[in-house]
Length: 429
Image 1 (cartoon, rainbow, N blue to C red):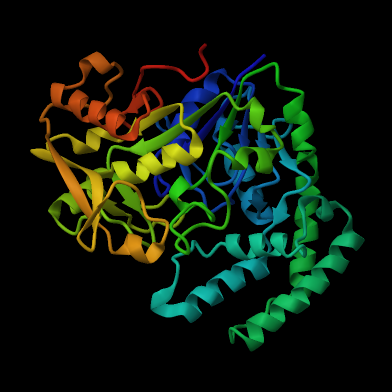
Image 2: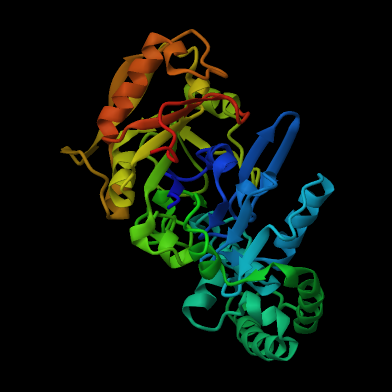
């Protein structure tokens, strides 16, 4: 039997999952996306080429790897075609290797219009969405009015469903959000034209995954655990389940078939958009982390909020995902700092806490309790062996392991797929 390994972000997204998946995908038969949409952004660096993927699994760069988009993913036909064409222009053929679940919910122009109109109406209270229609598409799915990928290829059925749902959404746009309605006929014509190019990718993904269970498969999460719609810092979350549990609901793999769950974390913490962030830094160190770490969104270009490593938050992520191992990324960004802090607890209205509060109002009022460790002046960039790490860098990583309660499998200290020290490979016995 093969192994099924899940990779998820253990913070608020942007942890460097794309590079980790790209590295692990070298030896697997397939890579599967199981949630989210093109609000995800995975940057892959291979030699002098940089690939920014939003929807297609990161394993697409390997010619012998099959890539699946599971039914937990919401799919924009426009975004999917743009990504296919971008890869094709770089000499990467996707047809025959990329398969999209027939049950994927579609993101269409009215979802984007709703997303942006709602954010505009909220003003300073906006959530900070990417404005790409992800939330409204998931709402349609839950309300059982969504159009799905399979509908694209039955024009009469697609038209009937589209006209019904667009009448509803245009009413909301005009009368509740005071925004311009979306042209129904234009959406119909454009989407049916796109369907001709997308038909080769239609697939029964759960069945295909079941037939590959004698080989290794990698399941690629998007966003981060603390953005999960149920487990995250609600309402400052994404609209899907970002935890390892979503693998089963979003791809069709039975939960007893998951062998390893790897959590990816930066050596510090970042967050995009609104929401509580106890260790956020509003000083020169925060600025240094942002600039040195190039902390700007792959999808939106927005600058990320930066702060010290929050072991309490990552410990919660480990708890709800059953992490078997961690991958630490961007360790080199901390090079040169005199001291480094780790959040080991919170203080809330004079009381000490060692766990993350579920109540968002309480979490917003939490103050971090820090432990200080000595920094290092040696460079950790491009290090490929733990033995080559500076003494204080090793001590820092050992402290993270102890606080989170999960062993470190890999350490990444550079953008290229070769800039990594592997302690334990999740696909080895």
